[in-house]
Amino acid sequence: MNFTQLLDAVRANSEAVSIPPSWAQGRAAFGGLMAAMVYEAMRLKLTDSRPVRSLAISFVAPAAADVPIRFEVEVLREGKAVSTLLGRAVQDGQVVTLVQGNFGAGRPSVVDVPALPAMEMKALEDAAPELPYIKGVTPEFMRHVALRWALGGLPFSGNQSRKMGGWVRLRDVAEEQVNEAHLLALVDAWPPSLMPFLKQPAAGSTLTWTIEFIQPTAKLSTFDWCRYCVETEHARDGYGHAAAALWTAEGELLALSRQTVTVFA
Picture 1 (cartoon, one colour):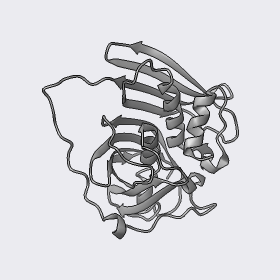
Picture 2 (cartoon, one colour):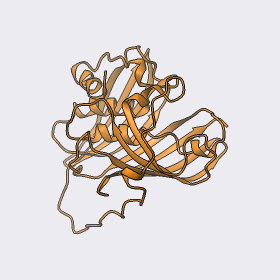
Picture 3 (cartoon, helix red, strand yellow):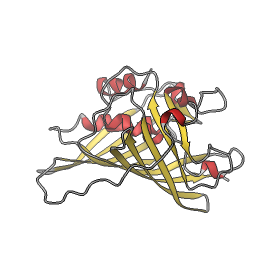
Picture 4 (spheres, helix red, strand yellow):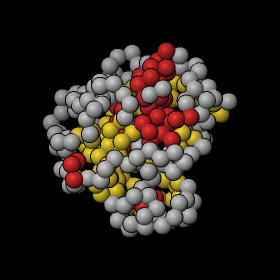
């Protein structure tokens, strides 16, 4: 099943959705997919079309492949402008992913501050070739996403640059307009920002993740490449703190992201 088919499965029956092993990231399902599926269940609970402004995501436990997951959503408050929802992915009675989301309608405002310019990086045609999916070497879910490095180092390269990033898009999807679920997958497709600092393979993962969406979402297709950059701001005692952003190829801001990541080295 591709990304779109899994989101369709949540919409069709949120009580039992199994993720194929092809979406694995080590012993867990790909976190960007888990967040997108919980988000999709949350959208179904909204009574209007107010857009998502921010999500706070906790990966509580690994979600196993081929084991049914139930998606639960609780409306914490539905105000005149902002709705706050809590979504859970539950597997074998255990919460595996927890998402709190804020959905807010726009309003007239005298404040209008443009986004900072996009991070400069090598043009798509000058970036590294697409990182290939190699069974047993790269995570299984990498068959579904395309990454082209343009900043910093690859995982386990010993590169000491605080910045890492490049170009990203989904593979194996039909052409459609990109929405916030797609953006979740594109942002989380990149490895934890501490990985390039290492000189040999070690486990690492995202512990918590907050992401803010720029509304309205820019018009782009699932076939379009996006620019991504993450900067490690601090790391010690096996935990790192990183800030990231995602832009269109033309430099229009799509999302701002922060992650607390872990590394076992």
